[in-house]
Image 1 (cartoon, one colour):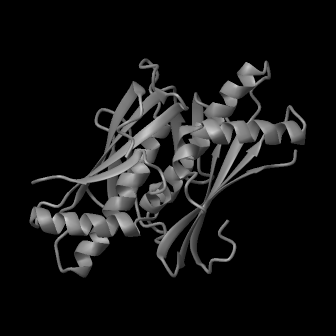
Image 2: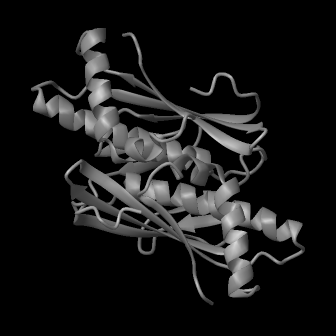
Length: 140
Length: 140
């Protein structure tokens, strides 16, 4: 429960899924995406795995972009997220692995900037309590 | 670290953001979404907040759909996710609130099924370590 934390609200949005795994998810007056079972390859939709990866990769790269700006660096960072759906003793789980590359700086500096982004990106913060979430800095 | 857990891989996917907050995020040979700063209302793109809500609402409703099927219920569940971006003493954070309605059953039964879905949905599991993630069952 976060009711004792002090926040200033900057933005809010509403998202709906009324169909389930096959149909549409949407933002009123905004984006709608066709969704389908990821294990049914004849269906054209996206799925929770990809949508989570789109969210995390964009959040991490937006954060890296801000960090690059603060350090007078051009924006060269890229984020690749690999999501795996697995079945284990606790049922279905997603493994989420984020890979960061920052070609304009040394590997050591890229690791530092990746660590900063991991601490600041709101989606990364939400996932940081899970052992299924991992972040890696790629060698150029 | 989850390296000692035993998993069977069912599906995997790759997602990229090379642009940052303004541009595109995409799945190779799959969906591409235009993204933009959520606080710039003249830009048409979606954003990490909405993409996370699309992921969570679809995952939760797909899980509810499976639970309904197991209980010989028609699929009537709907999931509404409200995401708020806030700024606090720890920087930017997202508050993620999922609201479940299951019109075909009593409120007490809907609470039970919501709790099951919260424990089983892989996206919900990933978020469950964060105090910023909350789930509510709505009265019909």
